[in-house]
Image (tube, rainbow, N blue to C red; front, side, top):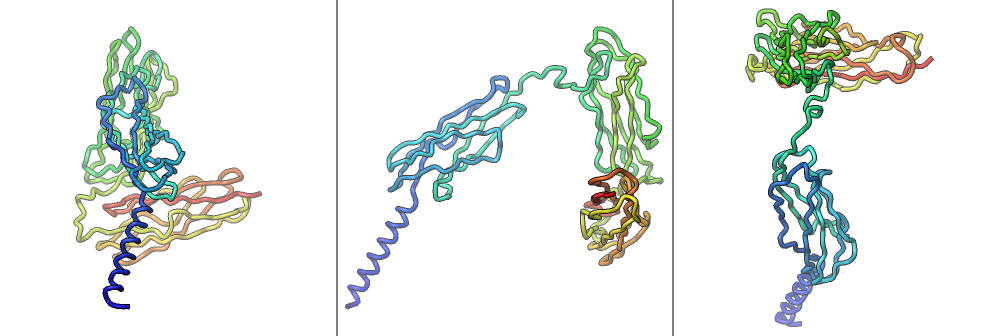
Length: 364
């Protein structure tokens, strides 16, 4: 076989391979593949658009699935084979309920050989509907007074930095009501400040302003929690505003070159089956410092039935570690599955709080 013949055979083989590769790649083309709904009124409910695609490949294809990352977007399509040159439709529905503002959603189309063969996009802007007073202020505090929430959850509270939040209110009655907030003496940090009106006119809306301020010279670490019971016209319906946060060091006060880093060996301590009247079992975990400065334990808190000899003030040098013993009192509660926690607050500026779960099954 001469050289010219060999070259001819190679060229033919490559051409055949190229044809086969093209035959293995069916094409489903949508024009357009993007649909802009424009302004969508939330009050009008779901909107729909039908995309039309053409099989421009050389063999039939079957749409196996159309996926999206949001349950608000629902596609409808046929799994019947689409012959070369034929058309198929995919109808996409978008539900704007409780989704105000702009949206931009992609849908991925997969063939029966599990390859993504096309992408569709829908977009638009949801115009929110007018919400009722009951939706905006779902908490009925009695006497016509309604609140938008009963929880003020701060993240971290730093010494010398005032942290502020608020609870919105509206008086839906046709008369002026009086408002009193009574702190629960059993759940009181002594650091909470409240700014609230004593009297609220009919139809008036406003906010109960709530703030924490930890003195810079006397830091408080760990959980800060307060509870305020509402009395409207001298009567209570049991509505209580709960405020809480975690006292920690201000990360801006810790230079990066001296910052510690905390790591724990486990996030769940498992005691397994434990006899209710038996001895108190113990487990241990390791607290490590992978940073550049001393890691200092600022606060230690235990949930019901759990204890530890670890105390605030423990310092772990860079590269060092400390063993923490955790003890369980099986008689502290009833029988069955039990879950508690160990909370550690350190001077780690990136992750001051570590919450470790503790589980057990209490048996007779």
